[in-house]
Amino acid sequence: LNKPKIVVLGAGYAGLTTTKRLLQKLSPEQAEIVLVNKHNYHYESTWLHEVAAGTINPNQARVMISDVINPNKVRLVYDSVVKINKDEQRVVLENSEIEYDYLVVGLGFESNDFGIKGMAEHAFAIEDIDSSRLISEHIEYQFAKYNNEENVEDESLHILVGGAGFTGIEFVGELADRVPELCKKYDIDRNRVKIINVEAAPSILPMFDKELVAYAKKSLEDRGVEIKIGAAISECTEEGFIVGDDKELIKAGTVVWTGGVKGSSVLGNSGFELTKGKVNVDADLRMKGEENIFVIGDCSWVWNKEADRPYPPTGQLAMQEADVVAANLAALLTNQPLTDFVFHDKGTVASLGISDGIGNIFNDYKLQGKAAAAMKKVVDNRSLFLMGGTKLVLKKGKFRPF
Ligand code: FAD
Image (cartoon, rainbow, N blue to C red; front, side, top):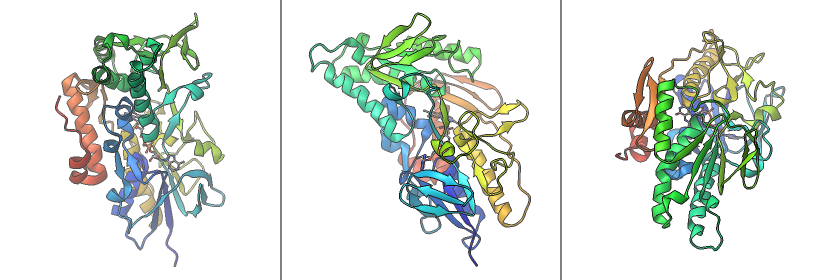
């Protein structure tokens, strides 16, 4: 008898956690498990702002999948998903095709420029290891060439960041620490460098309360970040952003857009019905109207009944969804009832650089400064622990004193 085949797409927080849980719940006789991922490594998406700023080495943020998933128990396929053909229960990859009985889609996020003219062409985006490393190398190149070429404009040293949500603010926080190091390395006066954050909304970090937001804003400004709120970007050109009603051009040698994300473009390419770039799922995390397709992490919207809106996409949410998906797959294979997903919010901590941060944990306990930065490192190391145990924490963990 053929075993049912479970195919998991994406080895991010959602896909990798699902695969690990499936291994715990199912015996090899119960199902064949296949994990498909673009690269042979998993990366910690929540650390990408540090890779982009150059405050950590890209290798620290990535983990070989075969180090955390036993390749004798799961078929590991390193290839890019192009399209899902749900009528034929087939996934089209760049180099092959795979059939499935059950599918878990965890292909994560892509940058969303909301159609702002020129953004896709001229701005960098923090999307994965490669795109983040490119940003840090580009910034370093601007510094390296500054004293080596004639007629270099000061603006080439400026770093312009669109969006003051989680990613944008965590990124400028890292830059505030990185820029003085680069100035020292390349003999450049710190006053020549600008870090500018531009946000259309009236506040930064809308998910935190006013007191913590005020703390974050002051901390960043004290360390030389210029924050322009209520400033909508109408266009991105080769030179920088065009901002506000008076169409001010803010020039910079490095321009990064962090203002929004949407689900993987594979969803649209597969003809799935999308709401704001993601799939709506039922409470059991299956795609609406589908018996055998689960969509989780940044690819789906899960409705929060209490708040009457979807849960915001986070790594924490993706990992909790993965637990329920694995349980529900096991239930489907044994004809048991499926479980509805319930989110247990453990709080949120945003870093503002290596030794500063803000956080809201355990039902509204507020943290700021070094305590928040320390908590962030605990959260990051815990994520490693869940992926690969103590060994991985010792290898890749964050222990740098501050
Ligand atoms: P991802 O982690 O993006 O994983 C997707 C996986 O799919 C990747 O391995 C990718 O390589 C693979 N993939 C993508 N496309 C294809 C394809 N076509 N074919 C094959 N493989 C593919 N959340 C928090 O909870 N706390 C935080 O502090 C926090 N900080 C963040 C900081 C930054 C800078 C960013 C960018 C995000 C942050 N988030 C945070 C959000 C969090 O990272 C995401 O919500 C989370 O990564 C979603 O997990 P996922 O598994 O859905 O997707």
